[in-house]
Image (cartoon, rainbow, N blue to C red; front, top):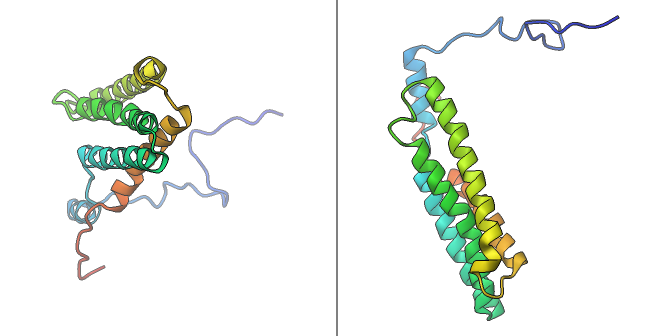
Length: 163
């Protein structure tokens, strides 16, 4: 016998998970926004730039080879430049006209970011003399992971009395 999917999700205990859903009041929503502020995409990109510069200088300094520094730096640029294009596209005035435009814009700019990243990686051997792929990949990964550092370093709001 075939099982037919239901329109309503059911928890393991057989209850509807939306049964106890209660929308936030305007005051509750405002308090939540104050407790959990948004992080600017430009702040994330600034942290990524700093991480990319640091990894390039460390690669150059530890190895003594300028080509390793350039390779690591280019790997960082392959993250930072597409991220900046993505952030600019998302923060443009047309991106928030309505929900449909915002969703379409997100997917469009994410695709642009992906294509630009791949194009930069494919162009690397022609642009960087004595390219070191491991150094470039280290620069790329460290710079990508720096976004988490930006989230962890985000300013914290003071706690309220009722918390």
